[in-house]
Length: 107
Image (cartoon, helix red, strand yellow):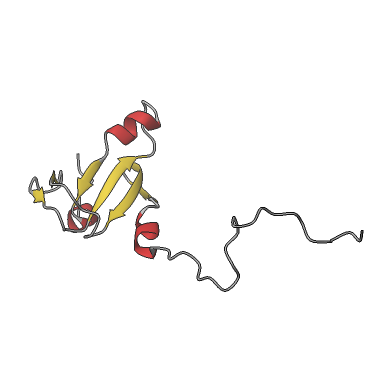
């Protein structure tokens, strides 16, 4: 019996060549990656939350007003926390985009 050069694959596990690839939600994928920012007050991880993904009400530490559901905002946490990354992630805060951009570094 002649040998086949094709690998033995179980039937039904691979999608056909003519099938469309699964659709990727670029908005969600782009929003999921935190950016790193350097500032006079330390290193920060900043993640954008889109209008569609904003589901809860938060209080912005910059202006002490509410960030309502459906409003795009930022989630920010320290990268250089003294108590480790788990504590920094637990201490993350939700900011208005404008409040984060215009925060003061005076102490």
